[in-house]
Amino acid sequence: MSIEPESSKLGTKQHWDDVYQLELENFDDTGDEGEVWFGEESVEKMVDWAVEHMPPSEPSTILEVGSGNGTLLFALVDAGYNAERLSGIDYSADAVKLATSIASTRRADGIHFSTCDFLNEEPALLPHMDQSSLLACWDLLLDKGTYDAIALGEKDDQGRSPAYQYPQRAARLLKDGGFFLITSCNFTEDELKASFVTPDTGFVYHSRIKHRSFSFGGVSGSVVSSVAFRKVAPSGVGH
Image (cartoon, rainbow, N blue to C red; front, side, top):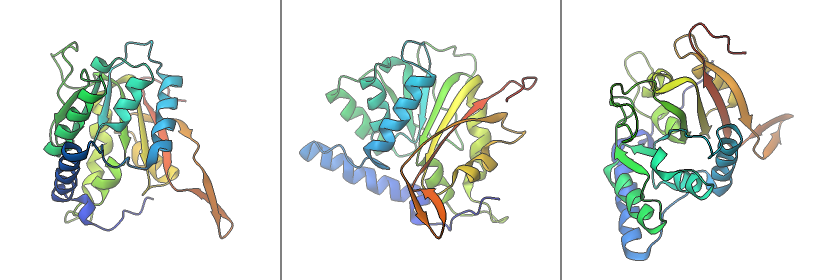
């Protein structure tokens, strides 16, 4: 069973509003695009995974949950993905402003960035998508640190962080056969599997990204974990 981390200011919207207000001011003043969460290597590995399993030649729709300054989506554009099929959501309005501003300097204006509270709102669809339903319409969902931050939010009266809602929220947005790729620094691969592979989500384990490992006390581990899950149809066999 996964042990949830203690609540922290990193799990509050106010913290991220303050972070992105400062990063937006810095970008306006100096052109500094801000921090790359988990570093460039994690971004490159997630893009490499996407290119292998959902190549740019396919007309896929991709949504990043908690897109921050847009680094991961810009890297997808650099790898050949059509910007108009990419979307990023963040609950911080200044994060959206920052990503949009950076996009205009990278010829990536086609990426759709919007403000959205993932646990309580449905992400807006891209213009070319079927507008009749907001659910089961994305081919790939990406998360780089957002689940971690949500897990640091204030616990409810049952001792649960807001992250308990996340797996089902993610699953309901994906088409059958769609992928969810997550990179986390707070949860191990096994903990992510325990949280996301449940009867309620329809997720099955698909693959993992190998990161540099370390050994301590005879046990090997990684600083971050990246795991991909696939959503299977209720009658499908996900093995």
